[in-house]
Image (tube, rainbow, N blue to C red):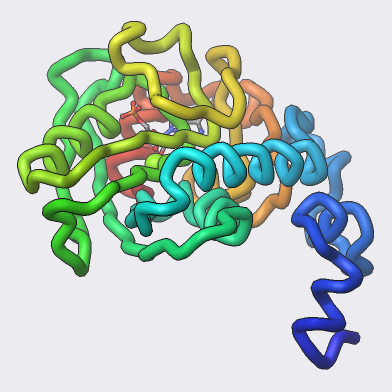
Length: 223
Ligand code: IMP
Ligand code: MG
């Protein structure tokens, strides 16, 4: 039990040493039969530390506004903010996409806008995963119209084979194959968000629902 921040930080001076050494264990077992582990908590922590350092090097003297795209990006966002060694502002947005997201006709709807004005600011959009890329395109256009000084996009995961090269994110944690993944904020019907690692959901867990339908359901109802 830690009683003061300095006591905590002298034990866990990086996110990955915290992931490695902390005493409590997640509620879900890694042997849960619904999924297989793709990235462990430790691998995630090491990658997020690197992304935090890269972002600090790029925007550290500009007091960037980091925007969390709720809810999926929430775990990644908080860890990334903790790994930035500079002054930042935090803001949150919620969107929902619906329609078959494989098609470019997919519609993105704004559920909750930013609290603060981003005109003249250096904005970093923090997403959980790029699939069709439509959500990120929508946010780029929405924020671009508000005349920010710059926009940088960071996505924890990128299903690169699912979208055109032009929809690629500026920074990415990991490129992954076209599999349905859960954990570290990502959900299936609102389950699994609190897994501390990324798992591939076994297809038999959603075999009665087509993949396209699954995505449409997920993104329309669960952000
Ligand atoms: P896009 O607009 O098609 O890029 O959709 C991105 C959104 O779809 C993400 O922010 C997620 O909410 C959701 N999504 C896409 N792929 C997955 C997945 O494998 N697991 C969980 N959610 C996903
Ligand atoms: Mg999302």
